[in-house]
Each structure stands twice: as structure tokens, then as C-alpha cells.
Amino acid sequence: MTESKINIIRQKVWAAKRKALDMCISAKMGHLTTAYSCAEIVAVLYYEVMRHEPHNPKWPERDRFIMSKNHGSLMSYPILADLGYFPENECMTFMQDGTRMGGHSKMILEGIDFAGGSLGIGLGVGCGLAYAAKMEKKDWWTYVLVGDGECYEGSIWEAAMFAAHNSLSNLVAIIDRNRLCCTDFTEKILRLEPLEEKWQAFGWDTVEIDGHDIKQLLETFNNIHNTEREKPFAIIANTTKGNGIDFMSDAPLFHGIAPPEKEVARAVAQIEGVRI
Image 1 (tube, one colour):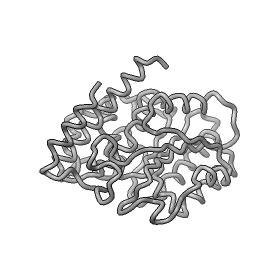
Image 2 (cartoon, rainbow, N blue to C red):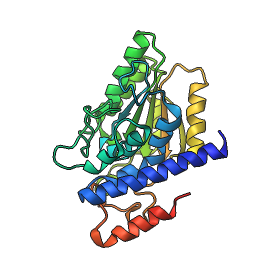
Image 3 (cartoon, rainbow, N blue to C red):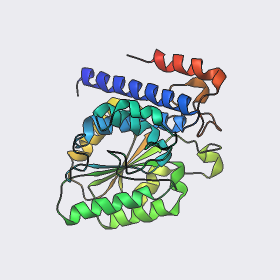
């Protein structure tokens, strides 16, 4: 992967974060900090890793993406629009009456394969998709983005056992390890560490990486695809909730809200400042 290609993806990440910020400012709500922690992950998947066709969104051979931490769907919308799944101006209908872009995704929107809400269900759906592909001898993959706080849900571990038992080597779970839930840090609420070892104990191959490092993300996905395996794969992606806006980064109680009106200009200036 050339540095120029990495810079192109960085530029795409900046543009998606800028659009997501505008969407939240307009709606006066939205899970902006959650979206920012997974921005690079979602961008790398859609722009470089997954096989998909924006002008044929139901293409049977496409790879599937499940946003299990579904309040992070805000980050998917500007990326899907940029790829041509729907007009970019539709993004500004975010969370308005009659919109197809809710705070949680709806499958009536092109490019969306999962409609979520309650945490803990996306990995099970991903297991079903991966199992179906395996039964039908298809070569498409399923990628599931899981929140670290979501790992408190027992259904995540039930799905993890199912995946390992059925050797779903075509399934990748990316755990967005931003260490911050709705109201406080995960290790204060209920300790998750050692998280990588827990996924290993459930029968998964694992790796821990910097979830904001585009080069590292690309190399990790390439290694997964180029290595013969029999196990599902879990990526523990260390991230920062609200990454890019200082007063919203690693800050409890900014979950699900737009920047306060008095801080909008500051937020915009900081995101503008990271443009390549």
C-alpha cells in the first residue's frame, strides 16, 4: 500500500468526519463521538477492503458489513454517499422527520445490511451470514464492528462461541476499543481486560492494533485475507471516543449529543485543521 493511497483514505476520513459533524450540528443531536472513534475502520473497509458495488447494492457476491454498535451508523452515511449509494445531499436529512437516516440504521437505505438498536445482536447476525456463505460455498466475507461496551452483553459471547465452533474463518469482528461507554470508562464500570485473551479463549484468532492507524488497519486486513485459517478473527482496535475534537475526546457524557452551540465553531475549526 503506497503512501499516496493511504493519504487518499485519510482525506476520505476527514471528509466523512466533517460531513458527520455538519449532520449533527444540523440535527442538534447524534452519536458524534461514537462515529469518530470508528471513522478510520469504516473508511478502510468500504474504500479498500470490502467487495461491493454502489450501483448494485444487493449484489449477491458482496461482502457484508454489520454495524453492531449501531449508534455508530452516523459514520457510515457520508461514506456510503461519497461512494454513490445515494445522493450526498440526503445526508443533511439526518434524524429529521421522514428521513432514511436515523440515529440507528434502517435497511431501506441503500448499502445498509443491518438495522440495529439494542446492543449485542449484530455479531449473531454476522455469524448467520458467515455460516450461510460457508454452507453455500460462497467466498464473500462478513465484517462486524462491535463496541467494547457492547461486550458486556452475553449475546456477544454466545455468538463468539457459535463462530468458533463452526470455524467461521470468513467472519471478522472489529472491536472498537475506545474504553468509554455512555456514562463512564469501561474499566470503571465493569472491567473488560484482558479483552484480547478473552476472545482467544473463545476460540478466535486475534490481534491488537491502533484503530486510527490506516496503514496498520490495511496491513491487518491484508494479513487476514492472505493467511490460511480455520478460526474467526477478532481485531481489538484501540481508539479514542470523539477523536479529533479535544473537548469531546475521552469525555464522559458526550455520548449521543452534538457539540454545544457555543462550541460549534471550535469543533469545526479542529476538524478543518486536520485536513490534508
